[in-house]
Length: 503
Figure: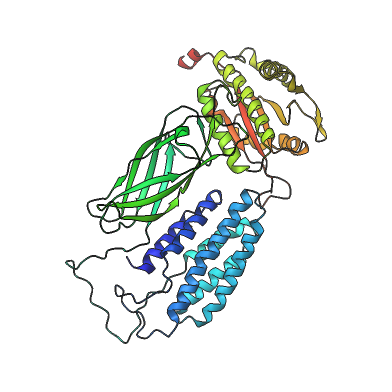
């Protein structure tokens, strides 16, 4: 595969995978494509000449423009990622994208390839037009439409003969790129991923290796961290070279264990990955650039110490996912506020699971429950778990809240006609959002008692626990610097006897 084709394949792959939620990964993939570019596109004997004579300096113009396409696109993706993290450097990254695109567009006047020149100019203009998140997909489409010219300078007018099947295959000389994706117990490794201490987790690494160095026998993933060796254990076997030595994919299965817990206020642990090809000669190793998961972030908790759990194992796993999502999407959230959220959410989820287990609101008692009665029952339950900090109906945000726990508002609703979860979220989530904003927080809880008729059995508690991102006034088209997240807990009431579904 030639330099031109290899670079464009990597460039298109990075753009094809674009989503706002993974803009940071897309930016990293785009930066990685720069390692595939030579300082100057040289003569390419593997491709037919499209031009008998290429003007002097055409290779340099092409190299400058191609590099600018990747760099300006990467700046845009970094801007999108920074917006989601409330990073103050976001605006600077967008300005850098505009400046890089503007400067590169000036170089196009000296480009002798009309199709490349015109499509690249459109791509740079699309990047300069990016002002809001909704402008990014148009820029991505324009970038994907740019063809990269292949040329071979020289006087030859006849195309080079097509190599025969017996011809010697091209041996790549680097640089080398490895794509790595990680799962923990069949779920993606979040950033950070929440682990319990002294528990062995299965780790699966999915590796894609486009090219292997000559003489390499295996690829090994290693890591660098500030953790002491006795604090953790991460093991992954090497990836053996395929018999053909061509592009290959493999899934490696290993394990990870963390021996000590962190406090909720601690920064995530970081394991930085590096990839090397090992050769038959022990003294020879070839490094490779990792795209995808180049760092693994972990937050380690102790079930006995962290007040993060509902005390129901299946719901605990869902809560761990939600807390990992909060830490990832709200990197600047106050740590005390985050701890309050974890404690009250765990207590509300305990009530949710207890209701399913014991049928607190069956089809006899559940039909007549009022919101005031629901509030009194839940309030007493929360006070037994969390004590005196659970307050009833304080005034906040120009309205009376239902329950307040330290910095977290818990809004309660009783629903007797609508069962659709998405409709209920859209209907009720705005009220706790205003209470949360009025209290200066970013996190809140909405608990809905569903008393609709249960024609089918209720879902498990995990399916009835979600984390919502409400739309905020003035930020309909762009993320707020300090966004809000509301955990929604559905409590199924009006429950029938299980045997009634068999009649």
